[in-house]
Amino acid sequence: MTARIQLVPPRPKRGEIVEIRVLIQHNMETGYRRDLEGREIPRNCINLFICRYNGVEVFRADLSSGIAANPLLQFHTIAEASGELEFWWKDDDGKQGTERVSIAVSE
Amino acid sequence: MTQQTAAWLLVLALAGPGAAATAQERRIPLQALRSGITFVRPEIRAMQEDDFSNPGMLWVEKGAKLWGAGARSCASCHAEAEKSMKGVATRYPAIDRASGRLLNLADRIMHCRSERQGGPALRYESDELLSLTAFVSHQSRGMAIGVSIEGPARAHFEAGREFFDRRIGQVNIACTHCHDANWGKTLFAETISQGHPNAFPIYRTEWQTAGSIERRLRACLSGIRAEMLPYGAPEYRDLELYLAWRAQGLPIEAPGVRR
Image (cartoon, rainbow over all chains, first blue to last red; front, side):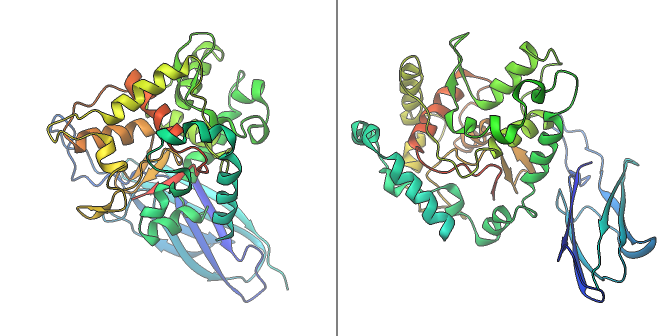
């Protein structure tokens, strides 16, 4: 599962609000569609997404079939210390994805 | 705005002596050409313009990984795509010298994969093929389309134009009736575009995924209730060549975003 991550601003000052943007490649199959032969296509959505900042959970989302394919998630946190942002998610098929980016906080 | 101005300067630079000879045949003059992105809603336009929120970039990124993957990778012959693939997408569809066939960029990549890299054949519309095509096309972003219709390509060009003008399907209309005669007007909730192939592969919100020009052409055929030709049919290639000639000078936008 390919994902792209962007921090705005890329090098925040301590105490500054950072926007975190995550774009995940996933077809978010709704479970409501049928294939050309009329068989149900089983639902396969990302159902849980978590972001941790230096080990502390800062964002969590329960996603479902109302979310478009290749979802773009944008949320905010406060830049407190340099370190690592960890992103983790799983889908209905049980597949898990994870990404890490480092964050450098200036004084 | 500045980007648009630059693109138009490029268009004017290219509309030199060569274009004058064929000016008679053009139904939309070169100065009046408009990319499909100018016909979509501002939200979609913003999505394409921001490289982060453009979902097509996911395919480009995946293509970049595939470019260097494996022992006989694309990179082992072509080295850095940023240099070696710059401008390549502007010249396709083009005649393959060895076989004499008209190939589009995806065909060329499939051909390379099966003949030179010895890997398993890529399927049309597979994620892997779309990713590589998007990655290679992306290297020509901002460059003007300029295909050759001389020599052996001429017959394909003529066939493509003939297809563009032929009434087909239960609706019994030809490409030209929408895309030459009525562009800019609305069809249901949509504005009809001029039908230029300068942003493929595109991410289409209706598809919720990336797709090739062939998939888009099939969508048009289905819309006018005509028979959809199978993937890889030579008629699509002829039409793609005519469309590329029609769009001469428009900058490549790959990966484009459309509604």
